[in-house]
Length: 425
Image (cartoon, rainbow, N blue to C red):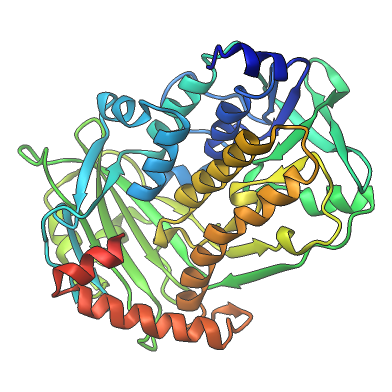
């Protein structure tokens, strides 16, 4: 935390509230502690003391790939985070060197490193960030606390109303409120209650379901690559995938997925058979010799949903939404964590340039983070709308042009290193 006396003076009496103690919320709190004397995180769960699962994050059971763009963004927000992940058992896997992946257009060659990913459990990713941020005396977490609404009016948000198990209902005043409440955020209705206009929302649902199971990694597989067989959205059948991610503790996290009409189940005796049914059986062959350590966990919270906050003409001062509160994506593309981190980078940039109390700060941040959100949205929905039974608005001519471009790029990248580098970049 900065000890700059000029910044400390500017921070005097500044208060911030963060809604949600997940990854995006903790990244936001880590930024806000530099600009406010008090940062309060309102969290409905009890946050675990170590790299353990949270009830409100069922998707943590499934494979999470933190691409280098997201890892670098988090490193810029919390320097030293990457080293702490690696020290706790995560692996830095070079791309595409450490990737055995069959794309819709064919197998990627394992060229020398162009980018990288961080491979570990989602619980470990979250815990390292949470542990670093909560070490600051400026950050306080209100656990088992429900967010009831925003305080203020259509022009400015002044704080939040919350209800905790012990403290009851109370108002938490704030110069800035950051909504990182995730998929369950009720921000549109909170804003509506203040007199702010209706928020436009779009959804694309491919009907995707995930099934995951953890296996003991075979002896000698410490440097094993990520193994992935992707679906081909152009084929007139459900899109099914299979992925092995090496995670901490000498384990493999194996995640299967299937869209509507081809979804995996939680039946342990069907897990390997499903893996064998995808476009290549390599994942099934590998796990057929591995010892399962857990039951199969299934999740169906995979709808792409975007709220176009940046389009509102009457966005209030003092309120910003980030991460899954703004947009969620089919997890198969691995966008969510990276886009959330880039959104918090936009928040930090605006705070550094203008300060917490500057007019127009919230609108400026909301419009800035629409860039990475929009790119990820177009890429995800442009593919998902193609699967049989997909529900949602046709993405339009622009998205179709982008989809054809990406298809050509993917095909060329399977054999040409310079194009592969452009793709991974």
